[in-house]
Length: 384
Image (tube, rainbow, N blue to C red; front, side, top):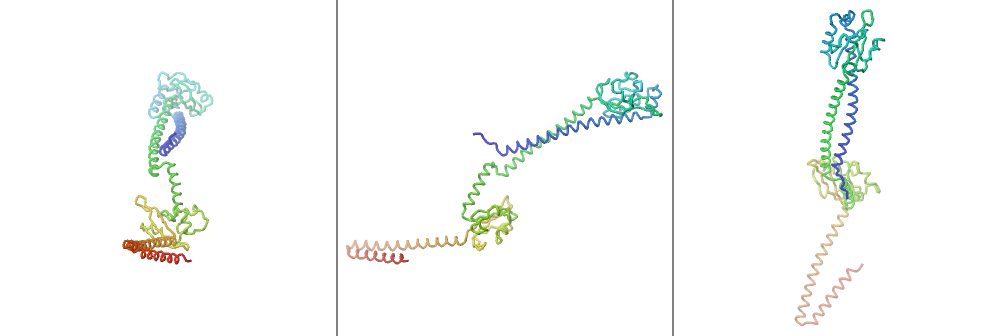
């Protein structure tokens, strides 16, 4: 027979699966957002630097005179030292000649990449991806204008795609590590929650709880005494059929309709709420409910030293009185039988004595007398 999985194991696995799926979904969306944000930030960064350099008075002046003193290269090198995530800044004139480059050997040579035509021909400001002398990179182009608004060149600011990829990888790694930390906390929480639920249920499995509940309800309905239980707020939590029958509470009402009602609405003269307040039990108390006199016991329900409710058991006093009378009659009958037994033994001794004295006639007469007396008594008792 296949062994059923325990409730604690089911809860632990379920919570772990839920936490794992939730964290996976969050990780996916956060990673996607982070990748887009990193690339968007990189584009904004290179474009801002490109426009800053293109509007620099020093760059414009030197490019107008073809930078005879090599000041553009020095200016760009100083700017690169203060900028983050910028790999290169290349200043180019309209002939495509570089005036700055991270590799000084490239200064004075033609610009390469094939993506500069828009800035040269149309004076557009834009971002593109292309492969240059330093590798594939994200590049921002901005035209450079002189005082007469004539385009005299352009600036290209770039960051390597590899650097952006490394930043993305670091961000994803951080997200994954954070997610693993969250998953670990979730797993620990799952074990603790499952253990707490198990302790709350006293270590019982659902099947055992169902069986105990059905047994409890069967036992309660089989009990001849009436039984009512309430919680600490005075709400009825349990009532059996005998209770409804004894107090004659609205014939044919379903006891489930009473569950959850205030005890004062069900039994206005009850003292169960007093038992909760005082915490003291009451035994064999007489009480009148719906024209029925009952004998009741009231006991507070304690949970870890705290009163969480009260329970009352009761019986119809008429039934109790009848049972008491029957018990009294049985006792009287026992005493009567003892007396008759004593009298009968005396008569037997008398008969035995007459026989020993060989007074047979007197013995027969005595027996006849006893029999006649018994018949007369029986006749009197049997008369209606």
